[in-house]
Amino acid sequence: MQLFIGGACAGKRNIVKKWFPSAVWWRMAPGQRLRECTSVMLPSTPLIIHGVLDWLSASIESDASSDDWRAHWCDDLNELQLSAKAQQAALVIIVNDIGRGIVPIEHQKRRLRDLNGWFCQDAAECAEHVWYVRHGLVQALNN
Image (tube, rainbow, N blue to C red; front, side, top):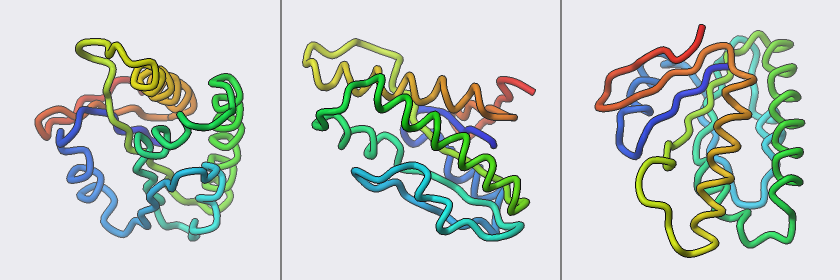
């Protein structure tokens, strides 16, 4: 799995489109489990997952605890990786970096920053490669 992280309009999509021109793109929908992405996975075809921030935003209104959400997406990330390996398909996740700057006063906005930060940490831990994109420039964060 590869993870591309950076701020809004940093050039993440352009880089991913250039590096994976034949990919299938999947936008996460509110209330959807991450593992549902396996339904569109094709053999030897990269799968790009995006829309994570909006997906997490929808979870804020949920009754599930942050720990429950984390457990679900960690299980799902593992399942996605196994499916991608079985299909010999590259798995790519694009996420927004929203952890820099002023911490909002509103509880819901702070929770969104927390959820996004935890998701990025968990995805980075699973990823073989993590790329930071800023101003259209790509920097490898791990090998």
